[in-house]
Structure formats: C-alpha cells, structure tokens
Length: 80
Image (tube, rainbow, N blue to C red; front, side):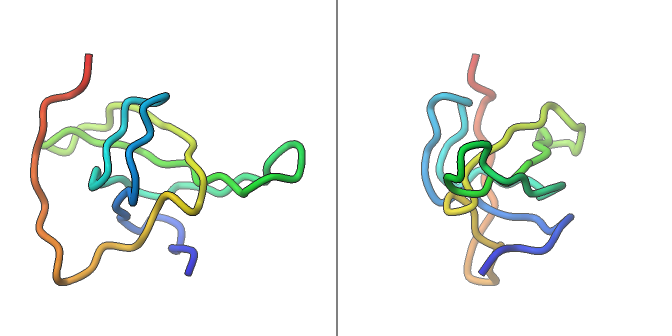
C-alpha cells in the first residue's frame, strides 16, 4: 500500500547512498515516476528531533511504509 501524501512513514531498509537508515521517520511530500520506467520514487522531507526540516530525498516506494501503532520512535545522530 502506497502511503498518502503528507503522511509520516518509516524506512523499511537502510539506503547508504543518501545516508538514511532503516527505521528513520520522514513525511511523503510527492511521488515521481522513474525516468526510464523503473520503480516509482517517493519524495521525503526529513526532520531533526526537534521538528526542523533538514533535507529532502527521493527513495524507492518499496523502501517506505506507513507508521504503525506497534512501533516506537527513536533518535540517532545525523550521519556526517
């Protein structure tokens, strides 16, 4: 199931190329078709622990899922 726009999501896998880790939380702000017919991309806005927007990244739709009631948020240092 593809999350709705502006919904908080969790990453389902680590994506080293954009320094994101499995379990990171973000907000879906758009979806983009793949330029050569591959998997659709999800445009995510990422926030720090105090709610400040820190960046926007595009990841495959298969790498995100809606947050669930049986999950707990955690914090980690931003990767340098």
